[in-house]
Every structure is written in structure tokens, then in C-alpha cells.
Amino acid sequence: MKVFYGGSAIVPPGARERPTRLRRRLALAALLLALIPATVVAAEIVSGDQIVISDPVEGDLYLLGSDIIIDAPVNGDVLAAAGRIQILAPVTGSVHAFSGDVIIRADVGGSVMAAGSSVIIAADIGHAVRAAASDVIVESGSIDGDLVVAATRLRLGEAGVVAGEVIMRVTNADLAGSMRGGLRGSVRDLRVSGTLGDASDIRVNTLRFTPGADVREPFTYTSDHEMLVDGGTSITAQVTRITPDHPSFGETIARSLLFAVFRFGWAFATGWLLLRVIPETVIGISDTLRLAPARSLLWGLAALFGIPVVALVVAITVIGIPIAIVTLVLYVFVLYASQIVVGMVIGMALSRSRWKCGDGSPAYLRMLAAGLAIIVLIRSLPLDGWYPLVSFVTATIALGAIVVYFFRPRPEEPAELSAA
Image 1 (cartoon, rainbow, N blue to C red):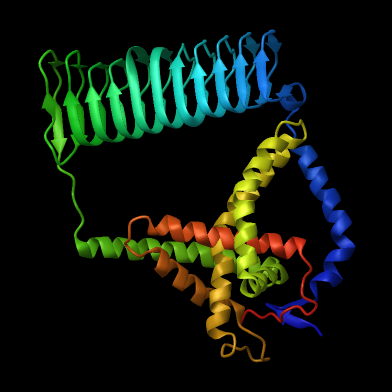
Image 2: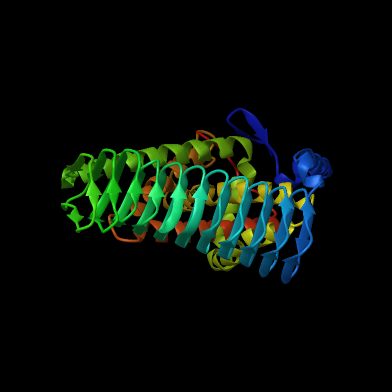
């Protein structure tokens, strides 16, 4: 029996998907091959437990291991993922490092992008540095660009020089070096004992200028507290404090409602598009979650942490890099779309017996709207840590349902669809 969905005839998934499965796989393979950059082919790829680069490398260098030491010059870019990365020889290109500890003690001609538990820099960097870590420490050397940091603690040593701006979102910052481009961003506790050569505009909780601080350009800070100034400082520029506006209870509620409406609108638009393009898949995944929630949760936990690890391992091969990129992009999209699957399940549980179209088939768009509205309201409750907790649970069970749906036997009878 054919059932019409938005003017299109829908047939059981197996009847339409099986004949085109080979063609889809070939098309995907062709797409992935087309995505391979020409520079990747010329790159040197090394994987292993302990990796020591002791001979000069001409070209880009891709590394994956538990402990990596680059002890010879690299004439190209470096992309590395490990438990610990040490760069002890010059790199002419840029460095992209993802590790527990990233230590750079040799000059880098390009930019540095690093993420890990700690990032330590004691070298000259040719362009900007972007780092996300618990601790970011610039011991010495010059950064010929911006220093962009998201961290718990940031420390700029006396021998450190930043030619651009220091842009940060950190908890504690201790800045003793020379900052020619000023400060931007937000810090809970900021201590400045270095030189500021350009205008600054920053949001802080507490601000303290300690001995050695030299402020030569206008300094604007937003805080509930007045700054503290120790002896031995030189502040020759105007310092302006702005008292932050704290929204009233009514304004907070209105803002929360506005964001809730915005999130609902984007999620519903995405769900509507998926129901138009792949309705059988959306309903099948939702039915899988509804019928097997425990199995979906277990598989979701495995996939949530397993997929990024697999993508990282696959990335060490030449053809694996574009596959890993595509996989991670799809992974992020699935995490966002997880609320659509859970919303469908909630809508089915509430309204499947009552919301019908003229031909008697379920009205899935109405179910989606009802379910998403409930999810958005639950996630918007003003409780500490509530939003990320609900998001984590939603993403986990929906991701698990997707895994179960695609890798487990499907029901024989597909659901009837309609979008009235």
C-alpha cells in the first residue's frame, strides 16, 4: 500500500533502498576521494606508541601516538594527536596539536592551534596562537599575532611578548609580559604586572595591577568591584570602570523564552526538512528508541565516545583524513538532531492515538512540534548544570537509537507517514 507524504509516494524502506545501495556507496567513495587535498598526498604520516622525529622532514607531518617528540626541523605543517607532544626543533609551517600536554620549545613559522590539559610555549611563533586547555603558559618568546585563549588559568611570563591582542575567556589570568595589542574578553580574576601598549576593554570580577605594570593606553573594564593598584606600577592612561547591568527577574525570563523560541524554531525546521527528505529513516529511528530505550542508551554511550576516537585513528591514513572530517561533521549534526528523534518519541507517546490526518494516518509534524516544545521547556529550566545534563542524555539515547536502527534488524512493517 502506498501512503502519500507531502505529495510524494512513500514505499517500504527495503523496496527502494536496496537497489540503490551500491550506487550510494560508490558515490560516497567518489566524494571522499574528491575531498582529499593534494598536499595530503605529499605528507609524511607516522603512527605508533612512542614517536621520536630525529631526522629532518620535508613536507607536512601527521603524527598519532601516545608520546611524540619532534627533535628535528620540519619544513611544513605539523598535525599531531597524542598523550604528550613536545616540539623541540623548528617548524616552518603551522602546528595543530591535540594532546594531554603540548610543549613547544622551538620556533614555529606559522600559527599554533592547540588543545589539551596544558599548553606550554617557550618559543617564537610567526602568527597567532589559539589554545584551549586547563593551563596555558607562555613562558618566553614572541607571538607575532593574537593570543586567543580559553582556559582555567593563563600565565604570560615576563619574557613573553604578544604583538597582537590577548583575547581570553579564562578563570584566572596572570599577565607579566609585554602586550602590544591590549586585552579583550572576560576573566574572573585578572592580575597585570606587564606592559599594555594599546587600548583594552575587558570584563572582570577582580582586577589588580601589581609591581611592574605599565598601562600606556586607555583601559576600560566592566566589573562590580573597583580595581586594586599596588605600589611600583605606572598607569599613565585613563582607566574607566563600567558597572555591569544585571537583568531583572522579568528580563531573565523574557530572555530565556526568546532563546527557547529560537531553539525550537531551528530544531523544528531541521526536523521538518528531515521528514521531507528521509521520512522512513526518521520514523524508524524514533520507533527504535521508543521500543528499545535501554539498548539505545547503552549503544549511545559507546558511540558518543567511540566515534571521535575512531575518526582520530582513521585520520592517520591518507584517505582517512577526509573520511574523518566527514565523519566528525556528521557526528556533530547527529548530536544536534538528537532532539528531533527524542521529540518524535515524546510526541508519539502523547498523541499518536488522537492526531490523525484525513486518511487516518498519524500527523508526524504535529507530534514533532509537541515533543520539541516539551524538550525545549525542560532544557530551559533555570537550574545549574541542567541544560548540559539534559543535552547529554538526549544526544546519548538518540545516537544509540541511530546505531541500533542501522545495524540491527528492522521491523517488517514500516510505519505509515503523513505530514498534515
